[in-house]
Length: 177
Image (spheres, rainbow, N blue to C red):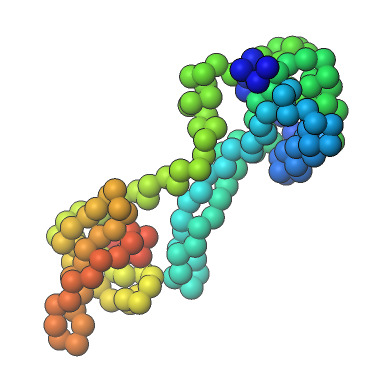
């Protein structure tokens, strides 16, 4: 029966996305409705940022605040369960009729959001950069190579009067102002 399941968008109160997802999953578990409601997701994006202490940390943000994606077989029961979950304001669609997402929309929305987005590179080979994180924080150097796939840069820094090549994560270097 789960091959009939389609993705639907559920609107929630702001900040209730995770709670709504947990509550729906709890009802599915308790009532053994896995064949009706297959999956519940709050689309998030993982990204890396440099904190105040120049340490790189992974963070996440909701891609669509106030929305939850639910993969389900639309029946009166499944509609009722989702619609009457605390924090849900309704399904996205005209009037009271929920409209499933097309396959193209599901792909475009990135329902499988487990992939970390690559860091934007705003410098090039030969440019002077400042090391802002890690062991070499505070040093400046020249970029020798950029590996966008591995998200690393090879930088030559001057340490103890010698030119020393080091490979660093892209987030540990910043363009000199």
